[in-house]
Length: 167
Length: 408
Image (cartoon, rainbow over all chains, first blue to last red; front, side, top):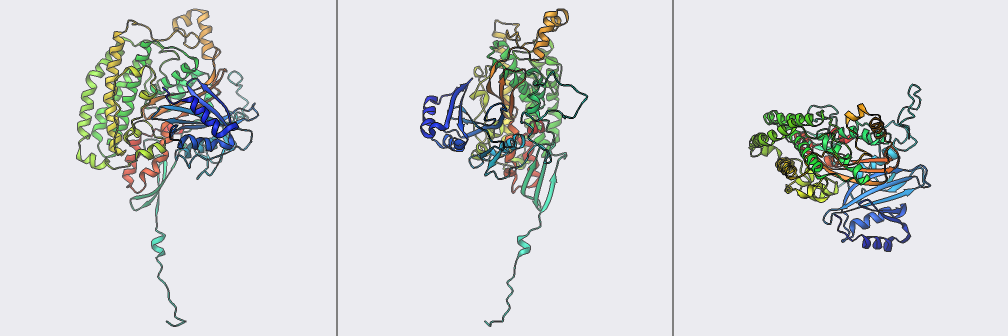
């Protein structure tokens, strides 16, 4: 059960980052904050270094793609404060077709492969990442497989009509 | 010193440019227990650096999941950590239940706990006995594996499958435990402690095994947290983080059990943490059985969720409405709420998380698996640096890296 004071967290974030905090909400049981791309790294660093909030553990990081939105590409980061047992989700969106974010590898070595995965599947660039290359897909793969426009099956296949399960 | 004197300063380039051996460990190597490749730079038998290459069995689960209705994702989760598939299945079902706000009867939650703890024991048996094999002790592996086989027989009674179980449904279990299953679970509870004790006697205080595993592949608590370790590997480093206690699911808060932790985070500690956890799991199963017997509810094996729970097979075969309803559920035509949810369970090797974004469509809009071993395997080069090649093998098997989960 989360024990951190979420109202305090929200007001602190707004105090430090003003209008760069785009929205805050409670998604089922997870406090979610959407921040602008420019301050993403600062927000994460603030949450990690602040003695009270102390989000010291990087749970996961992944890419998001909403092709119909004006800001289609998003990065989702989840942090965890183990002593207080609180979790937070941070999202940041960009309209750039070659999205670039600041790396989190300077804060957690664990971010290394997570960011490589986001690069591999979504084509996100991470400035300052020590070794940004594909991780599970083959190096010769073209395109970014987890983007919505990337077909699941070979688009040249004629023998299979997959209208039923297509989105 | 005259001007023309030619002094050649001796250079020791030969020493600086040491001739390292590049050793390819894997992709298929009998000692790696899966398809991992490690390109190791060796100085004699010492490892200078290791570079893991992963992705040999990548199957694009996250992409596949975007085109599959919820029930068709369960078999995908089987193939993540295939040593403890039931935990993955239940984790996925509980994620959907969290999204849809489904209440599950107590009895079902306890039944799930029994299955999940059996799966945890099976997972730990594999990992620990393989540590024994890699350090040269084959005997323990041969004897303890009959109990893993027995757990698979229990699965078979519960769902008909053994390895990739596809067990349970959204909202409950597909059927109640039958008499045979209860019989086998009770037999397991009675006889397994003897087998586990025997296994412990072989290894725990074995001088050779201790010499081999203590201080082999250690990691400090700080580094383990920085690398986002979870599960037994993090606990071996001395951090008492267990999802079952921190974010209880399926009524784990009602059970009393201890979280074993280590101090050095080395292979021996990881082995011992898993060993202790098996005893704890046994006690949890016993508690769950007692709780089930104490309940008034003796029959329910699923919640009241017609939107998600498949109708009974007899009705599907004999009535048109049930058949239509069955088809609607399988095709994902029922009402699926919008929203995003993260649910995590304590898997065999750490915090297994499901991040599900639903737009109300028949398939998830986005599904991200937080796979524990994908995240902690990146610490491997740091853990084996400067150690012997044979220690690297032992470190890898003690980290419980499962290829299916690693590559997703």
